[in-house]
Length: 339
Image 1: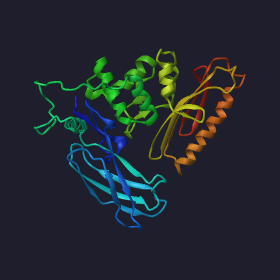
Image 2: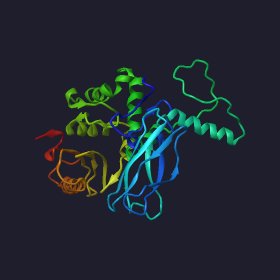
Image 3: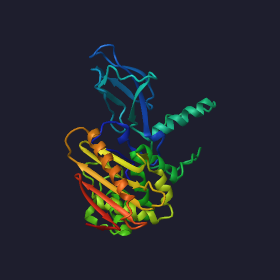
C-alpha cells in the first residue's frame, strides 16, 4: 500500500488533502488572513495553525472589491516550505471579522504525533527523542488508543461536507477487506466491480481513477447512478444512507462540481401524503457556458416540475420514477423501463 495518496493536480487545498493509515482533524489546517487597506497591499497572516516544521512564505496581495478568495497554498506532500500566493478581495472580511482558508497538511502522521506530544508535555510527560515517521517498524509499543468514529458517522459527514479523502479511504478499506483487488488498484476496480456485481451495470459505464470524484478522468453514466440509487433501497442500511444525504429544496440530494461540470443525484418524495412513489434523479452537465449559478437554478426549476409530476395519479402507485440528465437532455421513465 502506498503510505499516502494525494491529488497531484491540486495545490494544497483542503478538498484535495492527502490521506494515510493515520488521519487527524480531516488532515487540514487553517490560515487566518487580513487584507490590506488598498488594492495591491500585502495581505497579513493574523493566525497560523500550521503543522509542525512547516514554514509559510506569504506572497498574497489584496485584490479589488468583489473579487473574492483567490488564495492558494503551494505545499507539497512531505514538504516543509509552503508558498501562499494569489489575492483576497479588499472587502472579503465577514461580519465576525475572521476570514480563513483551509489547507491540506503535508504529512498527516506528523500532524497527529505533534498534537499527542503537546498533550503529553501538558501533563509533564517529557518526550526526549525527535519524532519521525517510519513505514517499517517491528518493535512497536502502544502508548495510546483513540477510536475512530463509527461508519455511519463517517458516511454522514462524507455526504454532508464532501470530505473527499473519506471516499479515498473507504474505497481502499473495501479493497483490503474484500480482497477483490490490491489496495493500490482499489480506485480502478472497486466501484466498477460493485456496480457490475450488485446492480448489473455494464463495466464500460463506470471508469474511476480515485475515490472522491476529483479526477477529471472519472467516467460514469447517469443511468448507472440511478440504478445504484434504486438498488440500495432494498438494503437494510438504506435508512442510514438516505438520512446521511444533504437536504436541499425538499430533496435528498448530493451534488458535485468541477470546472464547467455540475452533477446532482438523489431522491424526491411526493408532496401528497397518499402517494408513495420515489423520484430518483441523476444529472451530469458537462461543458456548459455561462455561470454555474444559472445552471444550478435551471436544474432546481426542472426538479420542482418533476416533483409535481411524480404526484400525478397517472403513475402507478408505489413505482420508482427515474430522471436522467445527460448534457441537459432528459430521459424519463417509470417502473425502471427507459424510453
